[in-house]
Image (cartoon, rainbow, N blue to C red; front, side):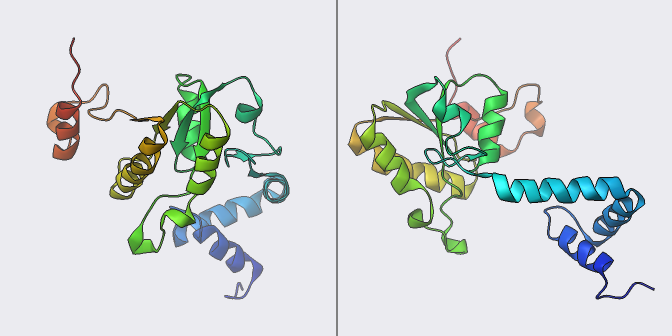
Length: 197
């Protein structure tokens, strides 16, 4: 019989810590892994490999396996820096193939309720990068949440006096959606950011 202190229950407990995984899903995943020991071995090896090899880039703080990520060490336009909240956002922007500049990962957003202020983010490092190179534009690509907007406004306030162009990703009604199903705040942003045809 499986007890609460068993290794299986410990695995279930660890799986439950993952986002979106509850008790039942964690138990189902644990039993799936037990059915195939090769899957369990491969998973544990890949987790150890990620722990040992993945680290933040020394320039932009995106996750990488080298000291400098491929974007920072490549031939991208270093005059433009796109500021993102985390490496997942960077990867989403990269999938679009629409941006050819460099990035800067803040590793979070300003959130006073969670005790996260500007000093807890990689803002000081961003300012050092701008001072040390010929950056002419900073694109703020934080998420369109209250915290993301607060972070964007804070960044704009401290970057504009430096003389750097500060821009923000456009936002509004997603392509392929019906206006009747879009929330009021998104419609408001779309109307304010409308373009001439």
